Length: 450
Image (cartoon, rainbow, N blue to C red; front, side):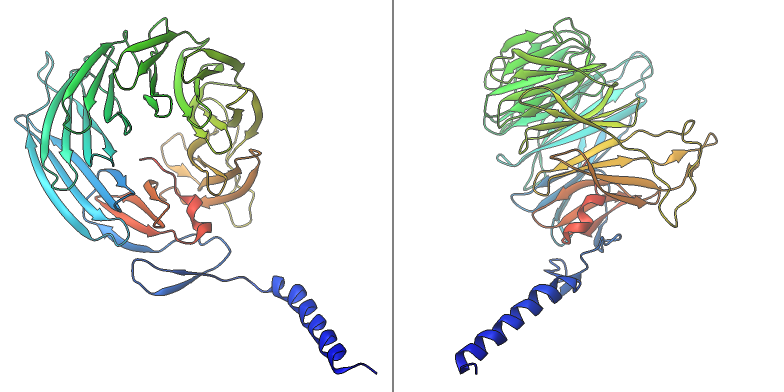
């Protein structure tokens, strides 16, 4: 006969078995707090395809995120014959509520011989340490690239602190918070402007040869090494290394192919430069070429996963995504990422051979070990898109596909993602929707284009 203690022990063992066997079969509900409304909400562990819109910002334009302060800065520019008008607004990143807005009338952009500017694109960068916003104007015409300008704004008051002329056709800037420097490369004039991030004052202009950036690469900063790298597409020595503090040219390096994209793994001091047919890995402190490897195509985009010491390359002429080891420079794996219409309820695939679309790297999520890849929808010869676009999620450790989601062709791209607050911001027409992406599984449908 069992003693009272033995009977209690046997009863507990049965309870443990029931919990171990039964609990995993019950759908897990992920509970979170909706920061926008303050109400408690429940997320399904399955993919919530349409995360809720908690606010709509009454403005549109380029976005910059101040993740330290929880602010979204929205900047748009309109160029007229006698002035350029900047519309700037800040919003609370969690609630989407307006904080401050301002319109700034500045001098018009310079004009060429024809007296007309066809377009004035802009790029925006933010230095969270100095609380300065840098708006780079990239004016261009039919046959000329006139001089650009950087408008330096104070993030708190949105006041214009300084307007700095640049070289011809400036591109997206790079910010080095450690040295309080901003680097603006001018593609058509072959120069690099270096600005003081606190005052916006032009400190130095460095001649680097004609066409310093190429078609798609922008400067990258390795703050740990105190270096700035960019690709001099039209130069013989096609990678230039600058000292981040002084702006002095430290080294010019020739890689085997015309460089088109560039990224940096700051944790191990490696710079990855890729062009048609090859990728090279450089030492971030010395600029020495450590390795060069062949690529299966022409790179379209390059992103680094610094936590795993991997770089991911998508191509502009094929459906592959390659994973490169940034320590050795070796291609570890190449994964095809195609539109796939075979899932139940999806449209039949058009002629894949004639209507191939190529994947585009959107972002690397180091926390979740995801590589987010967008495959655009097929476009018919007459223009309309056929079927949905596709989001593929790759494992950043193996480059294997772990999830595929379809979205309608009109599904908006996010232009900024705030991981800390669970928010994504997306341009929709003349406004910006603020999505609640607190549920982890809804996160990957957004790219980070800001």
